[in-house]
Image 1 (tube, rainbow, N blue to C red):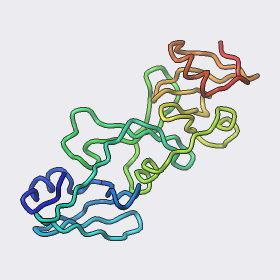
Image 2 (tube, rainbow, N blue to C red; image 1 turned 90 degrees about the vertical axis):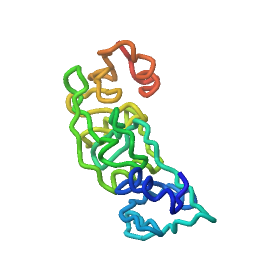
Image 3 (cartoon, rainbow, N blue to C red; image 1 turned 135 degrees about the vertical axis):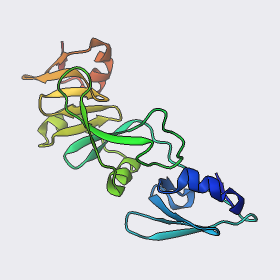
Image 4 (tube, helix red, strand yellow; image 1 turned 180 degrees about the vertical axis):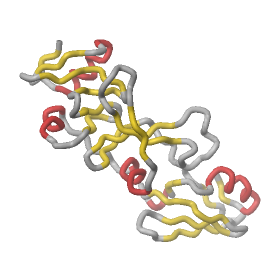
Length: 198
């Protein structure tokens, strides 16, 4: 969207109190907190301020972060950011259009608990994610660990989840028992050749 004086009302509607990225500033997220008649003010996680002047002759084009459903590691938990259906009118990331949750790994319906959005969590989501192997995940003292953008290992009850749904159980002796065989190929890819899959 072009930030111009004539677009001010749309800027307020779509961007006020949301997180965005500015192309020239890389993967840093900025929170748009104030919109005036002649400028837009945003801050990053370290409280560095950016001011964008609304100018018809030199309009600024803002990229909005269109979040994809994906896990990211936040401390000792694998967190998933996902969009809320039918809540997409805001163009920046905000509590109205995205949610962050972590898996329980129990049950069959994909149980998860939501957490509050924070600048740090969203910046971690935007940063390049780190994925670990299943063997590494089991060795970590974490509640849950990110294995891929859509898969996580949950320590208790030792399950592998796709999104929030448990699809396999990790058992003693490098064995994996499939709970949902349709995901066998994905589990084989993240487990590697050291694991036997039943």
